[in-house]
Length: 252
Image 1: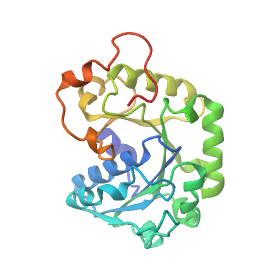
Image 2: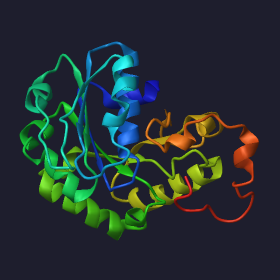
Image 3: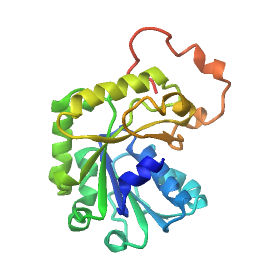
């Protein structure tokens, strides 16, 4: 975790974008809680996701606030687009950390477009979340197409983009799937851009924390189906995890 702290340096704003279903909101939530645990600055979280009714960071508002994070969002009616207040002010505030969970794909990324001057400042890091088991990250052409559309509507400069690996991060994701997903994504994107760090379910963090050339960030799954929130005995999952053969895309 010190390696990740060194990576963020003096940056105070962190914008999370990516394709729908990449795990971006989960990472943003965990990242904000980690920043709060550092205790260096007040932490503000902005839920700017307007594109889906499920797995929104606003659903764990109480957990974030309990961790000491100030949560910002606007109540929506029938998924009508809304604008969250205070974004411009926080992008300029160097005394606080601000985490922005931006809607998936180029439709959701429009919500950050009006704030491009603040997003493109030196104090802001934009994280693009890659998940090698999602259909839009299958090869460099898919990644380039999705990222290009997001940059086009958000007006984020390409030089602001930093990559995060998040392969198949779910309750049943195995260490083998994580390692294979990271290897695949590294092969695809490393000729063009470096990956800053990888994310993995906290239950297998100990198995894989030293398996990568980049830091590994442990993720607690806050945004998931309610029936998966119960702590089940390990053997309840064992029958569903193949011991041989290729990883099963999307099973997590």
